Amino acid sequence: MNSKYVKCKIGLFSSITLFAVCALAQETAVPRFRQHHRVFAVERDKIDAACKKYPNSFRDGIIVATFVGLQIGKPQVREFANHKEFSDFFKSKNIDMQMCLSSTIGHKDEWTFSNGMPKMTGANGVTAKNNACPRSPEFLAYIKDLFRKYAALKPSVIWFDDDFRMPHHPPVDYACFCDSCIARFAVESGVEIPRKELVEAIRLGSTVNGVNVRRAWRDYSSRALTDIASAAADAVHAVDDSIAIGYMVCNPGGHGYAPPDFKSWIEKGRNRDGVVYFRHGSGVYNDFTPYAYDSILMKNISIGRLCAMTEGPGVINLTEEVTCPYNRRTKSMKITFLEAALNLGLAGADGITYDAIKPNLDEQLKENAIVSYMHQRDGELQHMYALVRGTRQIGVYPFFSRDIWLKNEPRRSMREISLLGVDGWRPLMYLGIPFTFRERGASLLLLTYKGVRAMSVEEIEGWLKRGVVADGSAALEVERILKRKLLKTDKAAVFCKDNDGRWNNDVWGLEASLRIKNSMDMLCGGRMPSRVDTAVRMAQSTWDSAEGTERAVFLFNMDFDDSTDARLTVDGMYRAEVLDAATGSYSLIGEGDSFKLPTIPAWSPMAVRLVKID
Image (cartoon, rainbow, N blue to C red):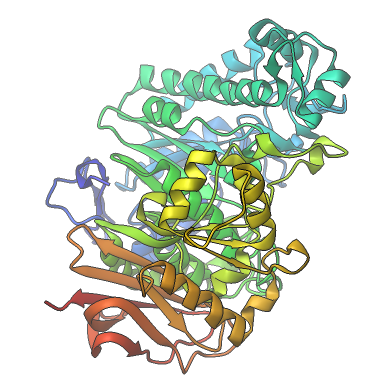
């Protein structure tokens, strides 16, 4: 990201003025890893006291969540007058203010502000109580009025929230199939059929009147999101074009039904300085579910993909830290800090937003709770962030395409049309393999199950010349698409072949994990860019400088045991130094192409800087 687009907040601490905010950083300014707390406009005195006590935790500003219509026992949460008063108070202290308008379509049916408007209707004909039809003129007019109203408060950013998306708004799963939306679809696509037949055509992947109905409906749904984004951005910028738009999005795999048009969103959302924000998230986890599907690692896989899809000049990628509300009995600070480090070193984000300050403020603000703890460790994140800036993520690329949804075979219901195995390789993330979510930095392609269906013959043949690692089911799909068997001349390695299997937990075993990594080394010409061998679950990510003279390797111990035996091996001769993130200093651990690593405590990150030796 070009640093001239990055907003920089500089602390000027005194008893009177907490800090000042500079408008735009100069080319020479050093970007910093942002930390934002998303607050409700309640208990102003406690939040004010927290700002003074923990200045690093608030130096990047506050995001005020309006949650219009949300019922949490504090009516002022929904009142514009209170939002204005709250905003004016903190802006008078030179604290940057952002506004988060929840929800534009409706994260949940009870969170919306669409009473009196046409409602969403699901694929099964169920109508929402509150969620508005996203295409209704009344709703779009309301969006314009609402965003104009909040733009008048002059926040630096106005956010769409939560999870700005088309599907998954219970009780409506795949919105919106109301009569008006179906009629408009018929005009735009040339497919005029009743709701029940339309849903069947989407479910079956049918072609009607020469039109692939699933693709046409997907694109139709995506355009509805873009229309809402355009209406809001135009309304905001008509009031003040210095305000940037921020989009909260999640789980790119689950949005094949209506993938965001990020290119359009970015261009619409930029303020006059070219800045636009994202707040990426996906799923909720806690200490009780460290390896569940909605785990800390799975969330960062989704965030990494989203950051890769949106990064570019002027784009500031933040992430979501769900605390719901923060409670020390469900989520430890060790896990909370590890997630921030994963957002940075694995996903490649520019900052994090905490959903922390809610009505249980007294618990939030205790020593060793989230605000004070992340304040104390802010410097560590800044030192780690400095290693990532200006680099590119390299390694093994787990294939992903938003077109996977289009290639799904018929299922019994719309709900069962799923991801076709795009995350079936998840066990491999714990083996110390360098994963990249940026295809341009990939050494190898990783395939699982039927996701390969979204690839063309030309794409598959091209990767077979570079290197492909697949499970048995994906290999069968490759052969079906190519109409030939894999050859010895193809650069490919296939695992879990038994019963045409998928990647499974057996790969955690020492013998299987070494076999997989050794094969990846061979496909890379002898060595992957980096690999880690250890007895514990270890995720890792490698970032290479543009000149190729330096690398940063981030290691994440995802285990309940400390890693005392880890060895890092790389594909060249380097001087290796371990970052002491608390001080910003480095300790030499050796020179060469293989290094014994210091102990990495359980559920903790470590960063290694590699400097190439001539």
